[in-house]
Length: 264
Image (cartoon, rainbow, N blue to C red; front, side):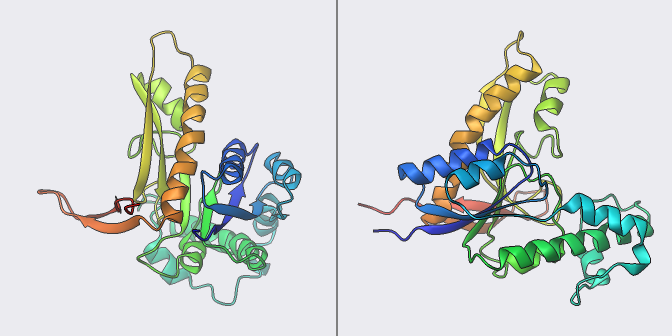
């Protein structure tokens, strides 16, 4: 019998994707179990979903941490291993024209929150961390302390658009406003950019002329609830491999290759 992987989850809101993964684990469609659910939002309804299934939860209140930093940035208690130059060289969440002071404040405040997040997570060893509607950008400070093996990333996210189109916080809204005839969702590994990491899987749906934004969101969520567990199962089966794509005329980039399913 295949060992069940340990899955950690971070959420910010209602946790419908979290519920889909919980249900898939319970039904045996994912060879895994969720060992913790953390949130940046004390009021996240998804925490109630986790507690209803006996899953440990914790909250790192990003809002309170960021407010405290803005009120007294000079008194900020930064992690002892915080290296601003290293992080600035890696991060690609912001345009190059962003003022250095703004980047510095972002990295300092997020490192404070992420250090608390890592501390809370340390009580629960895990194999894969899934972002299930976690509405905070992660910096290299956090990513490098979870992805300790560069060939085996273990932070997975689901995004409401067919990446690389429409990164950011409102993928379905951007899809609708652009007038697309096809929408979809994407599961990808996290990297230092915004929704730019290697893609694990995608699902698409048709957008009809009469569809409203709410119709698109509903169709998208229905696909998300199928796609996320399927991609997590590929990780559980150890079938995801990073490889370099070298298309002619384009710079090489890292992509995910899916190994064939083992013969029965």
